[in-house]
Image 1 (cartoon, rainbow, N blue to C red):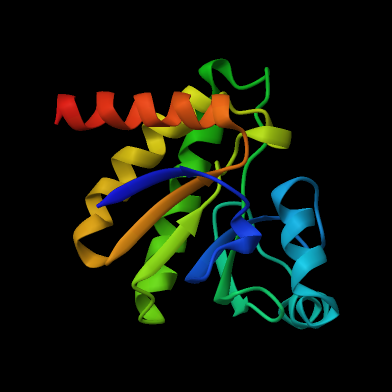
Image 2 (cartoon, rainbow, N blue to C red):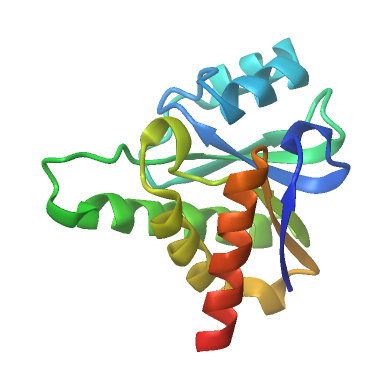
Length: 171
């Protein structure tokens, strides 16, 4: 089952959350910034020990001061006007979702919370991200006890809820 909720991903008491990461696993903007700020300096150290993470791949750390056991980091693509219709960015984003899910399964994670990967500061339109996310998350949903998309903004959450209903009714 897939849920869409409004809230602060850093406040959720869950097994794992997903962090949209910088390629050097540094503190980024938006959700990444909030995760790094709340997790504390141990996360910065752990990420520096891991090093780089190419776009579309995923890495795992502990949750440190967050109420979650694990953080799965994935580097999301930038939306670019030079890529007609964003096809390469969407392919890279697909890899982000799939690699996070695979990494979670490798670590026996059964409860996973995603932000709107690729939207926000990376500028991929929310509706495109939601449609892609629900297609991939649905393909893996029977392997997890709980998959949640947590969005900070109520209006964006309503858009994602509508996209989930549309996806479920068409499949």
